[in-house]
Image (cartoon, rainbow, N blue to C red; front, side, top):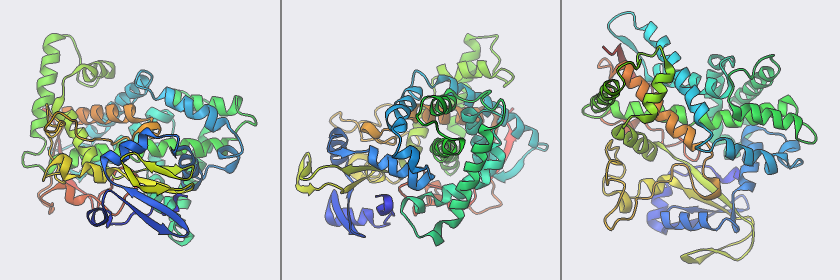
Length: 456
C-alpha cells in the first residue's frame, strides 16, 4: 500500500495543471493526491470511508519492520496499545516527559558550555544543536541509561532512508537503511534486557513494555517490543530534532539573526526574576527553569516554532478507501473505490498563496503573531502540521512544547551567529532538502557553520 508514497517533485506543477485533486495510476494501484485545505478537511471529517488504521499498520511493518505476529495476528496493538499511546501523550499527561526533556536539555547545555573554552567555538549547527537535542529527546523517552550517543549515527542513516522504505524501493537502494534499522532494534532489544533500564524512562515506554509483556496474549518478545519502541523513537527524533534545528537555522539567516528572540527571552527572564527574586534560572535548578518556561510569555518564539513547522514540514496524511462509490464532500466529480489511497499533501496547503499570500514560500518569523494567522473575513489560515482527524499526531503536545522550551534554553545560554568564514545562502529555506517529502520535517542539504559563545 505504501509503495506509492514516492514523492514527485512536480506535485505543485500538477496542482496548477489538474486542480486540487488528481489521480495517479502506478503498479496496479490508484493513488490520489489531495492538495487543498477544503478537500483535506472533508477527508478528515469522513473517517468511516477514508480510514487511517490500515495505513498505520502497514507503515509499522514496512518502515519499522514490526513483525506480522504483532501487527496483524494479534489485536493487542490495535485494541489496547493505540488507545494507551493516545492517552499517555495527551496534553494533560505529557507534562512529566516535557519536564524530563527540559532537564536533559539543561544537561546538554552544560556540556556544550564546557566545550567553549575560548571566546567563540566554531562548529556546525548539526553538531551543536541537532545532536544535543537528539540525546535529550532520547533520554526523556527511554531514560538516561539508553546509549543515545551510540544510536545517533545509525539513527541518521535509518532516517535518511525512511522515505525510500515507505516508497517500497528495491532492496538495492535501502540496504544501508535496513542495516541501520537493525542496529537500532538490536540496541533497544539489548536495552530492554538491562536491569534497571526503566529508571528515568517515560511512562510512555514503560507502559508499552509492561502491557505488551503482561497483557498481550501471547506476550510480545523483547525483539518485537524493540521494533515498536523504535517507531516511537523515530516519530520524536525524526521530527522534533529537525524542527528544533530549523528554528535556529532559519532565524540565523534572517537580517537580524537571533537578536529579536534574545530580546524577548531576556525580557521574559527579567520580568520573571522581578516577580520571583529568589528564582534560580542559572541552570542549577532545572525545575525552576521548567516553571519559568511553562509560564513565560514568549509570543515571537512561539510564532517562530509555528512558522518553522509551516515551511519545513513535508508530510503526507494518508487514508485508505474502504468501500466503493465514495466521494469527497464538495468534490462530487471524483469517485473512489475500495483500495484506493488518498495522499493529503500538507505542504501544498501550507505554501498556498491563496491562504498565506504572495510570500507564502518565505519564512516570516512574525507570521503567527497577533492576527497573522487569520485571513481577511476572520477565517483562520489552514495550519495542519500534525495532520488531522483520527490520524492527528499523538505526540504533538510533547513535540510543540519540547521544541519551544529547548529553543528557549539555547537562547538563554548561547550567542549563535553564522560563521562568516563559510558562504551562506541568503535564506535558510534554500537549505531545505525538498527531495525528501512525505516523511516529516525536511533535512538540510549541507552543514550550517556557526560561531557560538556563552551569553553574559
